[in-house]
Length: 276
Image (cartoon, rainbow, N blue to C red):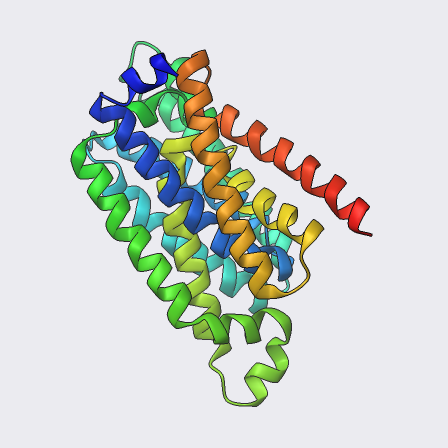
């Protein structure tokens, strides 16, 4: 505890905890919707797209890679929605095409236009995360705070409509709800969360923040509201615990958080079995 208290004296540790909590909260809120709509794999697909966009930004030489990564990821989220619904290339196939293509193209660009002496280290850091969360600047923290507040406000404002679209989209459309715009909003918000979360856990582990808290909550609770609230609380707790453990043990932040989420899922599954 003495070592932990001394770590909190450093601003970068406080920044990591703030951003980690915000990302975990936003991921869990939208994760419940994606899991119930059987579209949870979109998080993994968009994370690969974000990796490709970051590779392009690195080749171009942008100091702030989010300027390019965020709009490209949002556009691909919209394309995934349109492609998955309006053509013969449906849902999972569209996600697989875009994600694998972006991942391969990004890695190819980083090798062809290599400007770093440690290309393998850069790729590994981007894919799996590292201690980059502990090097966040104040401007990045403020940006994460603003975007997270926007995500939470949108979720609260459109809660009833999200609920309707999640459980019975055809009925929601029949009573006049603009389901396409709502799905578009969900895809855009998920894209924003994915780009923010890449600094925390890496592109290959991002979907864990979206999926595990929601699945854990569903082992215990049945109502949409209860699942959403518990998922958010559990996700924030796991993010805090994971970051603290990674600081104390010197382990990668992303992997530590994901393993914490897995342990929480196992515990919730046991509790659900006991409850019957």
